[in-house]
Image 1 (spheres, rainbow, N blue to C red):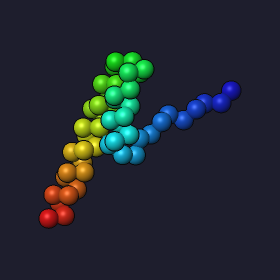
Image 2: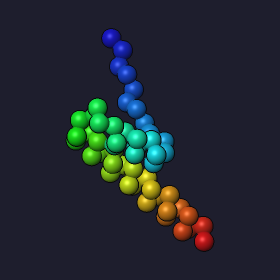
Image 3: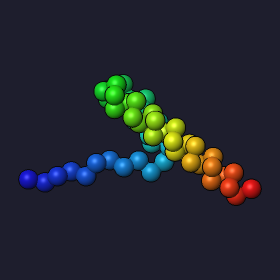
Length: 51
């Protein structure tokens, strides 16, 4: 028996794509949307820190 590794999104746009996928369950889409928002905020923080 093999165990598949979970999908790991590397970028905010990947999380957003999964959040917008109507074939996924609503709760899963909500989690992906929260991850997308967190990734966007992290990118903004990184840009602000460079200033």
